Length: 257
Image (cartoon, rainbow, N blue to C red; front, side):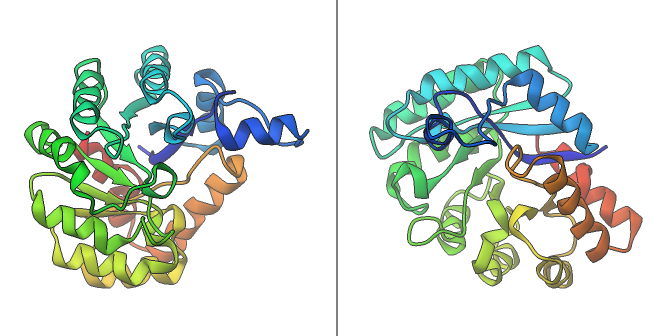
């Protein structure tokens, strides 16, 4: 089974997408539940972790965005695994309450995007939300690779503070991949998601931490099926062992949710 651990639901409310559409961008379109599942089919992906995109912009209603993701997952429960989000820097306790509400309605994890949401990944505003995640033992994925707010070592600080939480460093840290791999070396509850990795980055991580904490991801629908297949090709090139490839492509993610 192939599980993509980084896919966004994109709607008209999305800031970046809405701008492109108003400007007449040729690739501007919505990606609702049906379109997302069709893209998974075209890409050869069985299931995905589904995040909001619109809810990561402060001028949108992240509670409504969480409901959109939950509704989409309800339409395709075997294909879409819903994750929620919140804005802890606006109100730390209210953020934890919204995450609790979303989890009670079926969300399986949390996604934070510190760069868009305007708080550092090691912020104390996150503590109430992460305490809840530790209680429920659910994964938390952070966008990383765009300093100053979204740095792997900032995520590592939270991983040390909350060892019961599986922390996923999104995009493999991008240009900060050395910090991402080092974070996983130091913290056994840190996982790396591959959408920002190059082949050499993956090979380096395999040498340092093995395959058990590496999760396949694409950042779909950005780039479409061609991007998904390119992300698969990276892993096929970097990981010759079929058992290790199976772990990265789906088994590791399946254990977390």
